[in-house]
Image (cartoon, rainbow, N blue to C red; front, side, top):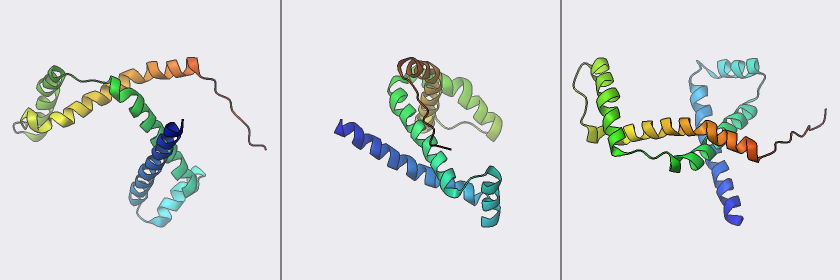
Length: 142
């Protein structure tokens, strides 16, 4: 029980750190601080609220990754097939030169395929969660 609490705390800290990085990237995409503040105001949000939303998203992504990544195994044949049928033709079309050897891009291709499998596993996992959990919404007054 204590280990779960520690893991959850560490996950929330990691999510907040990633959310802070995302917020900084969002801020830097605006011409200046006034434009950033104006965009926040148009959303009816404060910077703190935006950070909170981003942290919630990051934490959800972390939980999904922890639950589904171990199930999203990728075989070497899948990597080779993706390289041959998808990666190499796209690379040649976009760069007009030969693709790098499979060994140089294997880790990137593995991650692409893992993410695709996580995307495929997610709906069933969410349905399982809905069937096994009850959600209660508490009104905070007003």
